[in-house]
Image (cartoon, rainbow, N blue to C red; front, side):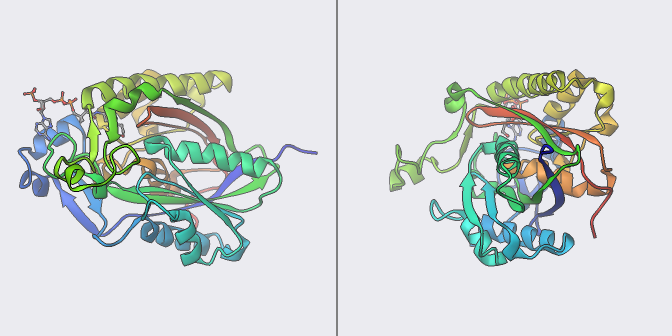
Length: 333
Ligand code: UT7
């Protein structure tokens, strides 16, 4: 029997309407547009209204995806949601998205790979499809990072935004789709990037709230140094094992945490800057959402057979790269 490949057959996304500019942030903490643009490359980010959760964004993205791919929700056999900021600790955001969109025949689960979450979801969904048992899977990846951002901490509050992407993944015998995914973990990264409170160690209490323990804590420089090296290393390793050179790459789609990390990664891969998809300036770091949002917003540029390298780095540390051969031409209406 021919090999079954797992193919992305449609993509959609959602970002909230409300915009938080650098000027807005400079009224909250001691910062300015010049610092944020030159050090990070973010001008503005989107913010989900309080009282709404990730499932609200995921539902909108999934409904659009089903409309543009003529998919009946009851045909969906699995809903996988990559996120660090689900609506609730339990139940899963995936179960809520499935309920809201009419995916009544699907298994559902959330998975957390922090900022590398979309790559983790790709590896997972690819193997479900390759098994031959699943024919239509919805993956939603995104975060409500503003719900865990400390707007009194100038070292982290300019970085994050809210948004999510959604993809439909189906089997194909064509030589297209999710060709390879490389994932790595180094748990010693814990102390440099994490949310201290609210888990089973520091259970939510007045004390954890007073100490701002329910927000992202990051040792920025330490994370920067690791991200800049390890994202490029992962790309080089996956290209080598797939016999790809820089000339073979049509698009690089990096996690959008810092414009300087994106540029350094592209430089090490020796890929022209026109081939690098970037939306950090208007979206900020949406964690699991960065890569699918970037793909969605650039869908019109992608052609059938294009070679894409995706890469991300995040808390854990978890990081990696994926090699895709895009399966269709341009934007699906
Ligand atoms: O997505 C998950 C993975 N995360 C990442 O990949 C993020 C990696 N880290 C970074 O992107 C960068 O480290 C940051 C953007 C977080 C920080 O940039 P940096 O160039 O590493 O700045 P820094 O932490 O070295 O700080 C430089 C200076 C410091 O002042 P002094 O000590 O030199 O006087 C900071 O206090 O900039 C100061 N600073 C600020 N100044 C104005 C820090 N934040 C701000 C701010 N506005 N918002």
